[in-house]
Image (tube, rainbow, N blue to C red; front, side, top):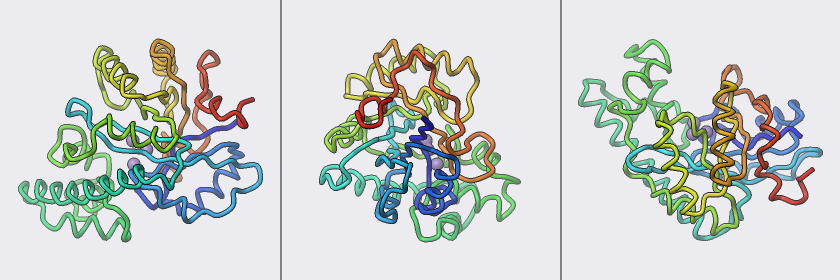
Amino acid sequence: MNVDLHCHTNLSDGSLAPKELIQLAIERKIDVLAITDHDNIDCYSEITAPKEGLTLISGIEFSTTWNNIGVHIVGLNMDLSNPELLKGIEFQSVAREKRATLIDEKLHNLGIKGCLEGAKRFSSGQQVGRPHFAQYLVEIGAVSNIQQAFKRYLGAGKAGDIKQQWASLGDVVSWIRGAGGIAVLAHPTKYKLTRTKLCRLLEDFVELGGEAMEVISGNQTASETQSMARLCKQYNLLASRGSDFHAPGQPWAALGMASELPADCEPVWSRWAELAD
Ligand code: MN
Ligand code: MN
Ligand code: MN
């Protein structure tokens, strides 16, 4: 089965409209897809009946902080009309607005003007994220490309890395569970945590009700996969697989093309009886 449980549309920071993403998923012969836009579920109101051969699972990628480190939690298979979940999404939307204003202030203090307005032009009326600020920084020539924008201004530890305002890890996990979903630790290798710290994060996550982690996220090395699979078993978690696809042409994240889960991991989709092999 080709399963991709992490990808984005242009309703967060991806480039494809929900319908285009679904079309691509069908072309890639994906069997099960979850669209996981950042802190919103708007794409699900734009997609109508599921297409033949493709099962769509509801999804979201929540931003949160754990010990002052920005951590992402994917929620899968939730009831999207759950009132607590909707309140949580609204909370995050306000938090994102505040964050955008703070990023603007920080960059302004570094002498770069007009960032919020500039970023908004790139978000085409949708929520503003750091990639939109990055596009603006490239446009005005402050940096030569998106990667450099993150490295100098927006990435972990840089001026524009504002994260304190997000909901707590516990709140996010409880919104997902309250809506009948499964909370998944997204891309665990991306936080650049030491092994000890990552174990501490997993301990807390499990304690708070987290049930799965992405053993496969985009392109990763075989040794990363091995190491994530070991942790997944050590903490008795279900294993998820996602590309974290944002836009066609990104070599690190092609939709539906990530490696297979290691055979000894229990897939998160085994929970959804009708999908299990
Ligand atoms: Mn993103
Ligand atoms: Mn993420
Ligand atoms: Mn993502």
